[in-house]
Amino acid sequence: MPTTRGPGQRAGLDREAVVDAARAVLADAGYAGLTMRGLATRLGVAPNALYSHVGGKTELVDLVLDDVLGEVSVPDEVSVHRDPLAAVEAIMTASFDVLLAHSDLMPHFLARQGARGEHAVRLGEVALDALARAGVEPGEGEEALRVLIVTTVGFAAFAPASGPVPADEIRASYLRALDWLLASAVNDR
Amino acid sequence: MPTTRGPGQRAGLDREAVVDAARAVLADAGYAGLTMRGLATRLGVAPNALYSHVGGKTELVDLVLDDVLGEVSVPDEVSVHRDPLAAVEAIMTASFDVLLAHSDLMPHFLARQGARGEHAVRLGEVALDALARAGVEPGEGEEALRVLIVTTVGFAAFAPASGPVPADEIRASYLRALDWLLASAVNDR
DNA sequence: ACCTGAACACCGTTCAAGT
DNA sequence: ACCTGAACACCGTTCAAGT
Image (cartoon, rainbow over all chains, first blue to last red; front, side, top):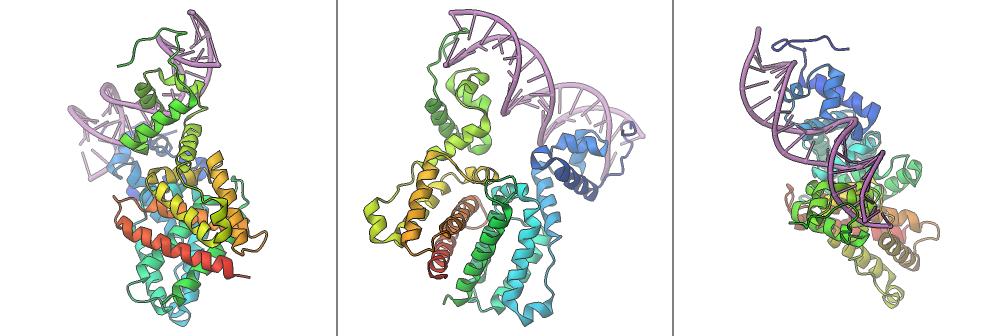
């Protein structure tokens, strides 16, 4: 039960607290259960208080998505140099597993046509570097990366356990598709 | 302006008319503009009248999606027998182009984890037959098809012209990914 | 069976005001 | 700058009733 607060009294909220609470709502009630009003209730504030910290619901979900992407472990420079192809594969499978745990966010990812938060950018940079080192032609890295991202997000969206196809089957399909794509991306010239 | 109608008076609606009107709303206002209430207004009926013909909004969008898939031209049996790999490619690129024109429906496709309408089923059957004839191992056709579908829908979702990447670039990426996947699916054994 | 009227239980967002 | 109160303009869906 939230302490009653008059106008002008602070709730001690900030952007991070809002994003954290949004992730908690997401974990409890899924994407369909994530509403600005419900989130405000959980935080003990009026619905419109959230607009002091995020621009709106779309931006909030963007922030949540990038927060999730922050959980993907990025291979260090040494690993990338030693075996760049394995590094690309590691980035993608790690991303897949993290995104799979938030598969109901993937339609939003696609509707927004990608992610442009700091974690997304960081992942993209490392993957692009690794692809170049793995032998992808200069100037073709972006295209290859786009293919890999669409595949990864697409399968993560498709895979929830509630679906008609078991998640482990989808995961196997994803891994196979990833191998097919990487083999072709590297050998194609 | 709809003719005023008292209780018990028919509007002459049926499932098909509702789906057709939904597609018209979609063309005018996009997926975000497709609401049960707005659709009812366009049809000149009360909002709840729609529930005599569709189970709800989710089912309506499912029906619209399958209606869209009905526009994909399916290769005839002769073509499939003559060059099965080309037939698979034709099915996928034709689907891609049709879905691309309705890219804002793709998040719904993924959220629903596929399409199970009659047109979707028909496309799947023909594609599966063509994949088998093209040399995909028995029992591996479903997996290959799943990979192709996710890729096709993923790129269709990703490609709208409003996005940061031009649609023709995305289309090129899609075609390349499709070639990569098909080459591996057929040769992999 | 197919429709209307009315209501229920919500949404996201904005505006003005208070400290 | 950060919050509240109140409102605006919507949603999808259900229930009861009419023909």
